[in-house]
Length: 207
Image (cartoon, rainbow, N blue to C red):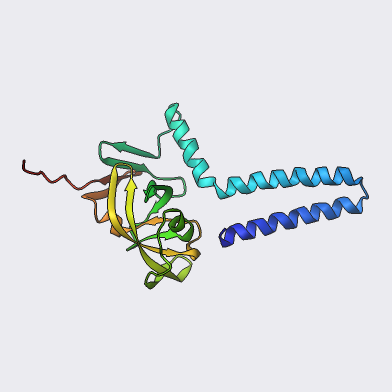
């Protein structure tokens, strides 16, 4: 659980305490108070889950909309070329896998090296604790991170092996594909509101 999620949980607990206090002042029956608290707890829990998993839920809704013809899929593979549509937040998000673990990753050409959260690193089996310490500049300032390597990173049919990644708990739940991934492609470009990723040409082998 990252810092923002802890803050949200504390806010939820505080809200429930306020509800309990207001009900107790009215001297309502204990059973009614308990039912009310449980009801608010369930509602608060559902809201919390939606907020925490909002990116995954949005991706699933977009995919469902594309299947029934209501909207365009956010990520499409045409052969080995991948097209990613610009998200409403103004960023390009890729559905990627790191050592087989699926994640929603921000594509950031301004990041020299790809960066992943501690949660993602642990899920992908990446040992970063013994990695070399590095200082990474982020939108929130400079943070301490560890240098590690991902055995395999894939975006649809595009993939690369032995990719350097920076890992830090302070990244929260954000995972980023940086230039060290993009530079291994033949090309990447933006046309309109679509990011196009193209693979390196296959090398012909003699019989």
